[in-house]
Image (cartoon, rainbow, N blue to C red; front, side, top):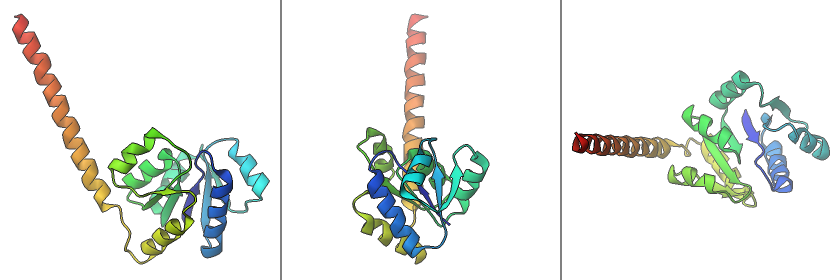
Length: 164
């Protein structure tokens, strides 16, 4: 399946994107991350299979087995990346939290650029789209973080030995 997870804001545009996905793909599953998202489903008469975010084992299984995750939520993007599933991230509102995804070289698409999302999905089908660079960036970030912890520990130990 292709998993779709509504981000915050720009709901009309996200529904248009979901409609485009439904026209091209048979199995698009929608994860409802917030309780009030059921109102979106009702308002727009969305007929996709729905999964509540409270069903964590099913969601993680879906994130790991999906063809792709289309989301505007970090809560969907990060575990999917960790499970090796391609992620197409859509920016549905301005947020500084996305800087981590940008650092990790995860493509971030403006919600109004649905053609990019469809192009990435096409690339995924042709095995041209992958997140391998993300894992390289994660390893680099991990090394920098561990180096920083070592530096802080050395500074603390030096400060302690200066007192003795």
